[in-house]
Image (cartoon, rainbow, N blue to C red; front, side):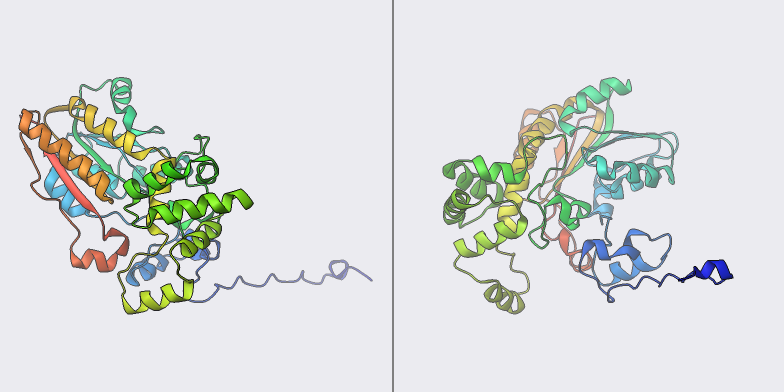
Length: 358
């Protein structure tokens, strides 16, 4: 058979890629959201539906954080959880070119994209791939006497939750990884394979507020004796079984009671916290944070779990009682009903702040 190109025929045209429906469910199918430069209106469309565009994160309580921590031109801000830069962009705008932003994040996968996003706002920032528990070392490395504002937005980002390859979400099938920092050696699957039943039960109760912590831990240990628990789907199936519930029964209940948590939500939260040793990092930040602030400095922390919020509340209250802090939030700041509707992932957010004497 002769080659069409030998006779001057045009090569076959490649068919235009089709978007899989108006609201594709699979992360990898949402290519328009991954390339907003080619589809300028796609992010606005997704946000209008109350969703989070793939590969991005919608920050919570931005205006409330700014009103409480009051960033001013020329100040130095430490953003301990840079993420997609939602709060960091606002810090840069408010501190102006005379100020400085120092950002921390352990997730290298998104750090380069965030740097590009910040560079479009200003050049007066630096980023460090390290845990915020090492803030004192970074302060010395930067040659700074102290920060005016220290801020942390705890928990996982939508960029991590929505990517099935990261294993953070019970809604998507993927490997049970859950590491925010891929330099960590132990994954969630590793933990489930080795953690004693009593320790696992305690972690689910303390870190996830899971009422069925004992039967879930028992079911996990039973199943791992027969076959390794390697995927999010494996774990979700075990949790349903431990709770004596079927996925269809859950869907029926969810339809009747819109705000019920998914049966696996608390277990996944506890495992993520355990894998990344999040409470230890928070305790260290609360311990050394005040020493990293200048006179009149402010510290603010957004938490999404009662255990985290309790640690923050107690540290700030203790600081006020001992004279370390001049003032602290009497009650946590929570999202408005409008924000909860526009960004459902903000529902459990709690923001607390404290201020050093001037």
